[in-house]
Length: 149
Image 1 (tube, rainbow, N blue to C red):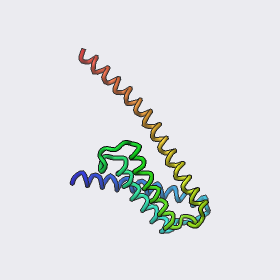
Image 2 (spheres, rainbow, N blue to C red):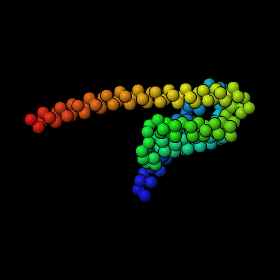
Image 3 (cartoon, one colour):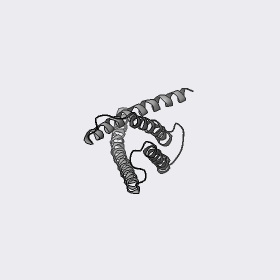
Image 4 (cartoon, rainbow, N blue to C red):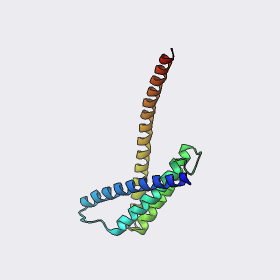
């Protein structure tokens, strides 16, 4: 039960951060578009995407629910449902004209570019952090071996 409450607290904190960042990004975009306010429906759509998207992140990228899964499968478990969540919100909340197939292709392309860009960025970051920690671990072991001598 304690693990469940910890997971809910972790989800709630992450969802709040993602929602806040989404509202800020949305506000910046709307300022550039000449808008002076954010509608309650836009805020509702951002809240839904933030809440469910955070759950999908925890489902796919932590061991809270799925204990053992290859990383590439975790990417699929996140990417496809998250795209469907975004597409459903785009359609329901009318983010753009739903009948225009060009806009849907643009929407899908932007999702794909951002997803791939984010994935590559995280891989580069983890690669360099892994090398940093490998170096620190090597120094620790070397120092430990000197202390034993």
